[in-house]
Amino acid sequence: MTATTKSLRRWSAVHKWTSLICTLFMLLLCTTGLPLIFHDEIDDLLHSSVKPAEAPAGTPPANLDHLLANALAQAPGKVPHFLIWDRDEPGAIWVSVGPTIDANPVNNLLIRMDTLTGAYLDSPDVTGRFTYIMLKLHTDMFAGLPGKLFLGLMGILFCVAIISGIVVYAPSMRKLRFGAYRAQRTRVVRWLDVHNLAGILLVAWTLVVGFTGVINTWADLVLKMWQFGQLAEMTAQYKDRPVPSKLTSLNGAVEVARHAVPGMTPSFVAFPGTLFSSKSHYAVFLHGDTPLTSRLLKPALIDAETGTLTDSRDMPWYVSTLYISQPLHFGDYGGMPLKIAWALLDILTIFILVTGVYLWMRRRKAGVSQERAIANAAAIDNPALTS
Amino acid sequence: MVAHRSLSQIFAAPLVIAIVSTVGLVSALVGDGWWDAVSWAALGLPVLLYLLFVWRRRPN
Image 1 (cartoon, rainbow over the protein chains, first blue to last red):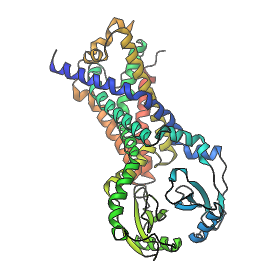
Image 2: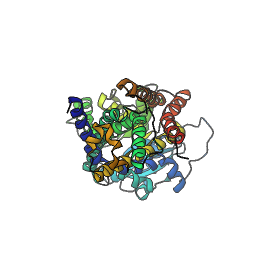
Image 3: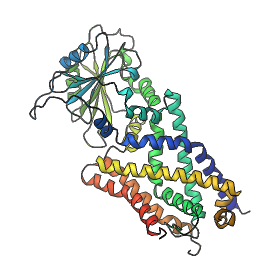
Image 4: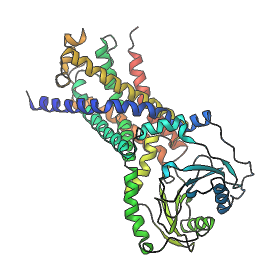
């Protein structure tokens, strides 16, 4: 056996085992991911929501303190965690409230408010929604952080499967033109061609979506890193201060942040004591206005007792990496045609997974190992396989 | 069937497609309008090629 054959056998073993381990989970991720591409459209179709009031262009937004008070009137005894400007619906602002300031925000109540009038719109329970169930299955299979990290591991195996797939593509194609589809041959040959063709055509997309998905599974850890790193540094002088007894104006804090970071738009505010802030600050997160910079957030920390700016810095590279990897995974950054392309590529990925499993089963049945079939491309013409 | 192909022959087309896809992935992040259109075309290409290759040689 030559060195090349040996190394090809090793690569095909890698391709086989990484694929086999992750395939079931990748099928789950691809099928749940498909409706998630269109989650906005599906939600609009399945659920009605109160429309914000019509107002002539240029109407100034409501005072945020007034808006917040109206929101809290809808949730007696709850405390605000976050105030979030809706990315897609400029007429709406969300107030996220929990039972206590240190309660897990995952279980928060979301109150939707009118940006211009500051009036209450609705507070939909999203947890029963089809898109929510898909999202949970897709991100952690209802198993919390361990589930998330596990799916991340499957994603890494998927990326290794793609890379080893590129290597074993070569011997398969030694006697074939690019894009060969031997339509007159038996199913195992046709499906091998389909598997090779779709696999190689989609290499860049599957690698990017796969790897950005892996990065997304680390979001909670990245947040923790930022909290104990940059955020702790920025608020070091406040470490031993008592929690402010009375919070300064939210509206004022957002105005100070706007002036401190000119040219950027507020995206959300984290209240003092939440995961995204210190116990003494409003953290106002602002975004830019191009498709790329609208994904990159910059925090401005406003002293919640005096209402003055403490600090504002660009986020560290590991947070920026996470933010940029999000659109690249979701496909939501180029309008409906991009979403449709995403969906078609996702369906083709399902094809690759299914044909891959089929090829493995057929070769097993025929007693031809994957390694041999790939290392020796002629094995595909073996009568045991093509009969 | 064609004669034994070299690695560069095998990987020339896939390399071009991977580069085009990458341009498509980045383009819509950079800007709107034409940038988005480049993205749609570049990421539509692999799907189009797949259909083309499979349909062209479909058994009658």
